[in-house]
Image (cartoon, rainbow, N blue to C red):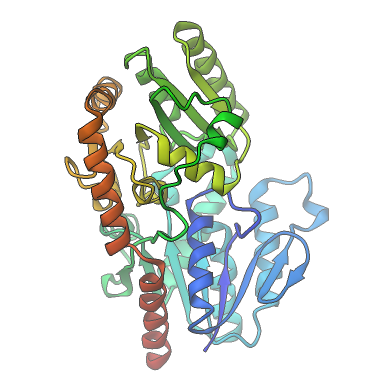
Amino acid sequence: MRVGLLTREFPPDVYGGAGVHVEFLARELSQLVDLEVHCWGEGRSTGVVRHRPWPALDDANDVLRTFSVDLSMTAALEGRDLVHSHTWYANLAGHLAKLLYGVPHVVTAHSLEPLRPWKAEQLGGGYALSSWAERTAIEAADAVIAVSGAMRDDILACYPALDPARVHVIHNGIDTGLYRPDPGTEALVRNGVDPERPYVLFVGRITRQKGVPQLLRAVRRIDPDVQVVLCAGAPDTPEIDREFRELYQEVSAERAGVLWIPQMLPRADVIQLLTHAAVFVCPSVYEPLGIVNLEAMACGTPVVASRTGGIPEVVDDGRTGLLVDVDGEFETNLARALDTVLADPAAGARMGEAGRVRATTEFGWDAVARRTAALYGEILAQA
């Protein structure tokens, strides 16, 4: 079975959950099928073909540049038996390959453009094009994979023309051999974190989706003796970047121990930071699943997260962490939940241990890959 896996992100250029998903899925799928990854970038290596936007579009809207990559991917997919695209950045390539070569197209939906209206701030008129590309690909796909049950509901609500029988739930996974508690603290010291003081940790992009402004306002209310470590970069727009910086400066002026790490850290550093955090916080206002919560749980850390999207399918409220409703009291209740975990380290440790067990037993990437390959087989048998 010759499969083309289409994505924007792939190592070494991974900046979000979709990229993490594709990285580990590809590693496991390559043991089960003849896999060729098509991604953004320069050059070619064994099993990986990289494509860059057309130079003639260097000054054009980002969506047009994306479409030029999609055309390049499509041209390179001849001979594949099936194509599998991830995010709107690659969906159009999968759809065009389906039409051009007569092969099945599988879409994994990591998020949905209709549920991210703030993307118009980033893409301008390109948001209408990204939405069109996603809708066209999803509605014509032979199968759509939702990364959570909540995501499946969202897909069918946004695209009611889609046959529900074509939407399958295959959760995101976690490599619990890689993401595991690391007793070392050198990464903390190197990045300015005091290992002797408890800290709240956030890891994610600076976007409206991730709820970073709400988090900054919430930490004003938590125990002032606790450090707050923000591994936050890759802002979507200059506007959200400016808002974040202003809030960060305000909060830093009000309380000590607020540390911003804007650069993308090596994975080993992130694992150490996750391991030693008193609590990991995920304040997303929209999150189909949230791999980063699995990463924290696999490192034995309790999680305080939004009760939104697929997060409740990962974080077991009261057992592996606490969930907070995204409502008018969100920031107040987020601060209260963080203080609850911080005030009882023994209970936090029990939540962390339960999270590690849950991540290990229920979310392995090998199982994700087997379910994905089985779906490919079913689709090809019906073709």
